Amino acid sequence: MSQSRRPDDAAGAAGPVGWVDLVPAVAAMAVVVVASNILVGYPINDWLTWGALTYPVAFLVTDLTNRRFGPARARRVVLVGFALAVVLSIALASPRIALASGTAFLVAQTLDVQVFDRLRNRVWWLPPLVSSVLGSALDTALFFTLAFAGTGLPWIGWGLGDFAVKIAVALALLPAFRVLARGPGLAVAR
Image (cartoon, rainbow, N blue to C red; front, side, top):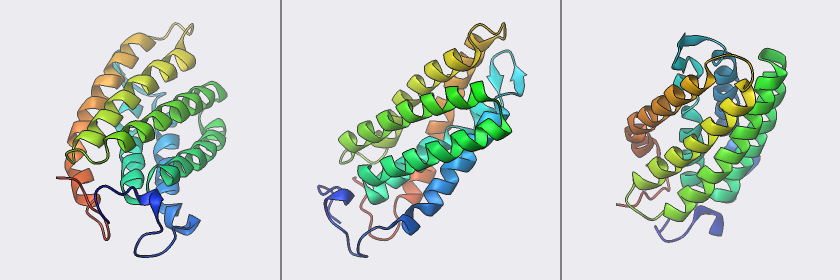
């Protein structure tokens, strides 16, 4: 695949991409989001919850899907992962957390897909880093406001700590992106 052609532009060497090809990404997305929605209820301190340590992996899943299959299929993974995560989170977390998470997830991951795709042909680390930072900022602001505003909990501090961890994890996951994005038929720019 050439670096100038997006994966959605053609079927690729292995043929068309079916839902079966997206199942691992959808499953990973649902597991990460549901786990994060449960873990956000367990504070580490006044600045951080355990969910901050797991949720950034959702951006890695989105970016790897976008790199491998293109933005249209990455959006499918986001939408199906969103639906599964909301349903499971209502059952396993709380309705308010599920609604806040679903809203923040859908908006932030959609932004992540768009930003990554616009930067797709730049130096390899730029698309996942910039899209994750922007998506994380939006996700954090939406989620913590919707989930915790008016509860009396230290949600602003949790949000700031959460965002700092998301950025640190996004940086730490860059080598994993580099390795995983070099799968069969993939071209990673420079």
